[in-house]
Length: 187
Image (cartoon, rainbow, N blue to C red):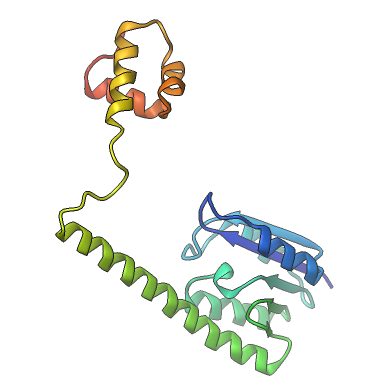
C-alpha cells in the first residue's frame, strides 16, 4: 500500500516548505507538487497522483484547500476514493477517511473551505471597486522612467534589446512592446 503526498501553491512567491515537511513527517512514499490555482479542476500533477493511486493506497495532503477550493470537486474526489477503496488524509484538518467521522468532517471542511474562498473573493472585489470609485489606478504602475531610458538606448546605442532590458531592469517583451508602440523598430 503506497502513501502518496500531494502539495500545491498558487503563486511563484509561495513556498512548499511547510507542506513538504508535514508530508515527509507523515511518511509519504512520494510527493507530487505543483503551482496552480486550487480552483482549476484539472491540474497535471494532481492528475498524475490520482492515476497512480490503487485500492488500499492513501493520498495525503497538508490541508484541504491544497487539494481544491470547491466543495463539488472535493466531494467528487472523496466519492472516487471511496469507490476505489483509496484512503485520504488531510494533516492540518485531522481528516482520515478510513473512518466514518473522517468522511463526515471531510464533507463539512470542504464546505467551509469553499465558503472561505468565496468570502475572500468578495472582499477583494469590494476593495477593488472601492479603489476604482476613489480614483485609484489599479494594476502595476507604469515603468515610465525605465521605458524612456530603454527607448533612448535603443535609438542612440548599438546595444541589443536583451542588453537594454537588463540595463534598464525591465523585461525584453516590455522593451519590444514600447518600441512597437513608438514605431521605432529598426530594419
